[in-house]
Length: 262
Image (tube, rainbow, N blue to C red; front, side, top):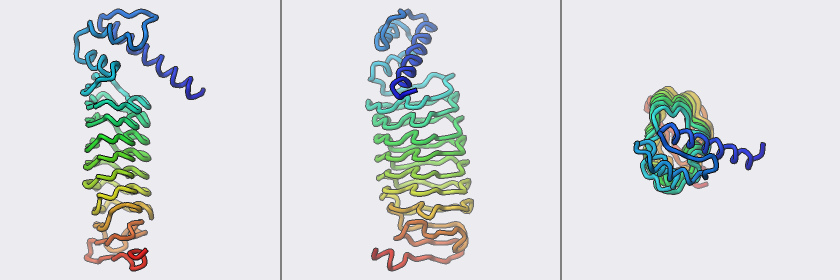
């Protein structure tokens, strides 16, 4: 099925879901009403979730409380949404679709469900208004480019149960300065901070056993603290050619002169 047909099917299913929600709340809509006309029907329904729904349809939503009972956020659900948006996600949500908030440039803040286990590929990529994110401890996995291109992201709190930091997870996050890797992570994949030049120091916990040889390439890292004896993880300095590496046995690995001079 082609992309246009997929989008039409998605819009039709969305329209049907909203129609059913209006009817369930006592509203009236006709079979031939347009999607945007549903906002008129919602006006006559007084409840918190329908007010939020009306705002989203009209494109002027600033604070969206996703109704409790919602179990998933579909792929592309908020793609390219540019109006100011703050989202509170109930704990009934267990699944996020890939790219669900991709290029949602209006997203200022999001409170994630405490029952999601995975942040899928590019879920929040290019959310240029997002300044901080807390990933709940329910999350054990993240996928490629989850927060790539979040140009105003300053602070990230990772899940204490995360096992892998995936490729380009925080690449092109040019203002990112604060991120702590929890002692649950075992693997750090490639280019996780590429073109994120504000981050200068990273601490690697003892749980990490594998770091991609280009994990810290093309970023601002100049100091790496490793909670292992010297060369306890192969590939040092993992692409951070200007970085000094401090091991927990007191040994220090300095950047080579060739790397410094290019």
